[in-house]
Length: 196
Image 1: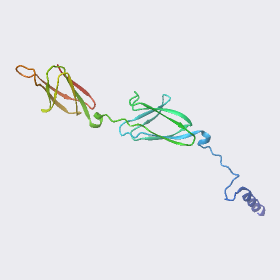
Image 2 (image 1 turned 30 degrees about the vertical axis):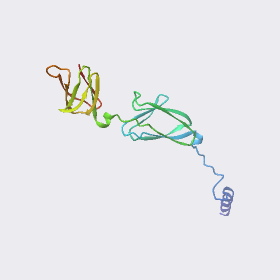
Image 3 (image 1 turned 180 degrees about the vertical axis):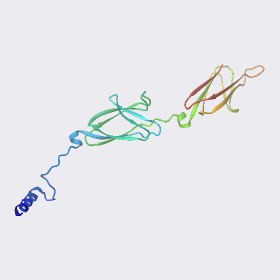
Image 4 (image 1 turned 135 degrees about the horizontal axis):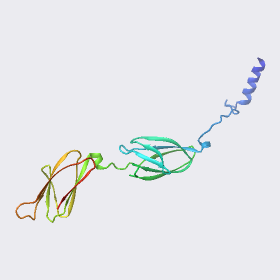
């Protein structure tokens, strides 16, 4: 028993520094410096768009609205291709030159939400190809006057129907020319009416 206590005291004396930490027992640690990696966070702050992120034309991540991801990346420069559709809408490039063990963050750009998406609207374009002026009425209410060779656009509530009346103001002999149309549209749809 005395030998065991003596062995313990000897071991304890040679293996401790003045703070009491063991300096001869080293924990083998595989850390970010050894692995040559950095931490990357990518955030999609958009309330509307899903983002597709590619690296070297390969899918890297898909981020839904208000989603973020964290990944370890190999140290060095990485170029990210960020877009809101696989067809390349709202596409841009950004890069990170990451150093080992550092933290990096990419906040994806938030493209503006189209007016028609935000307001559940469709667009009506009225083009006057005649040489006379016309009054525009929507649901029997006067909206504006349209001149010759002029085009006007209106954003109307999607899913609803609208009576469009185009009434000639000048240039007629007995009665004005009147066009009556009924239009309705889906969100972001474009409808054209031409006076000719």
